[in-house]
Image 1 (cartoon, helix red, strand yellow):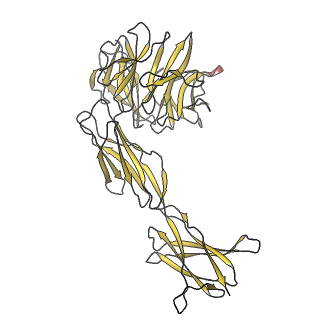
Image 2 (tube, rainbow, N blue to C red):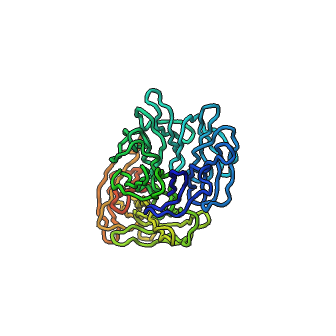
Image 3 (cartoon, rainbow, N blue to C red):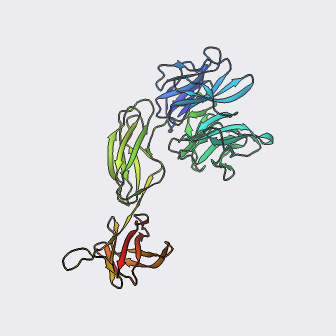
Length: 455
């Protein structure tokens, strides 16, 4: 993670407390660093030209480039979720607005009707958390849609709350308050929860990229704890730093897109993108896709990521399957497993067939009233020793379909069952089958099959 301290300097430090290197050559004029997604770029604030302006550089400190030239202060920059833009606070004549610009500094403009501080995007880019004045309660944490609409006060506390940070799954927002670090559901469905640790005004909580830990600083140390506030761990930063503040955590982890549960029909394929996020460079660019199993996970696909840290696969699950991504790490980065498994739920395919009746000469003939009509039901993929339901309806004189009969029948060893439907009159009928689902497949209903009877 990136850590600032006093005397003023910014360090790169690993979660085990080992200092890697000093980030800025001139720490007194460069501050507020933030990583890009993938860890290849760092955006920061510098006063080297007499005013607080925003700069960007490579993760190794090379190629520093100035992005803003505003007469007022431009502060607290952060990359958006996809790395294509940078959000920041622009101060003009004593007022502050949330601005956004392209990653190269072009197209700088105010972001909707936001008037606040400390903006932070959700991981999917659909929500923005920020600190803004809330009347008599002081400054609260708000969450709004990307265009500024549907803003919800998620903290609703007296005093001053700031520095919102999102969990990896976009469900929770952690923030600082006047009595410690708190967290709250991003949809405002419940009040904030106080984490069970001491400290007055602990600075800037930082979620780990996989959402499993939070870092914060008090005194001369950095603390780590689990995302539920338990498992507090001390990380020694440096004896020469008297005030340590974690300000960014480089993304060094692997993730799968899509991240949410997906439903497909049996036989469909699902495109998956594995994304490898790592700081600066890596000597291992191979990631693996696994299927979770009762025993060891099963390797499904494996491949090297491209220059953007991505590799695409196609999977063809025949049953409901949970997938995870793994990266074995390299000489400078630990191994990583995707934090949230991706569940693909597969709908079975219920089918119904009308067994044709044939005369002695082999020619097809209509079904006759008063005689059985053979109807066959099955499910794809093959299921045996389970049940499907037949539903029969007929068309009445007002051209409305009316219930006739239904029943559950067991699928035999071959995965099919044939039943005889006895008609009583010359009518038009329709029939369909349905499968209630099981642990491997979701339910499904077949299309209607139509038939007539004759006298």
